[in-house]
Image (cartoon, rainbow, N blue to C red; front, side):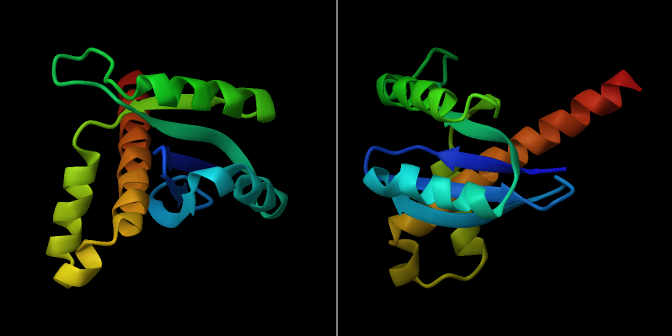
Length: 144
């Protein structure tokens, strides 16, 4: 069974998270400059098997697509073209950056470290991925 790769897309940086081999929990992986993402992903996929991509999708509080979908949609299409055999799932990313920041505070990170946006990006990717896993578990439980 391959892992799932969570992606928090940004125009400057892309936060990444990955599941454990059993797809039970998500862990922050890396923050990659946007222009280096394809090279990084290509190298990563040579080392690891990925069953699916889980991309944070910008949604407003009224459940309408957010303003940044104009960047995320082309990214998702490109990901699908580069890796047609790997499904891409969209996950509501509302409030993930805020939740990541609160997690850093709760984890005792110093103020200087909390200002590192790269940490927020990969934590956001982990939150996006974990929410996908929890939803998947809930759906399986409902089927029983």
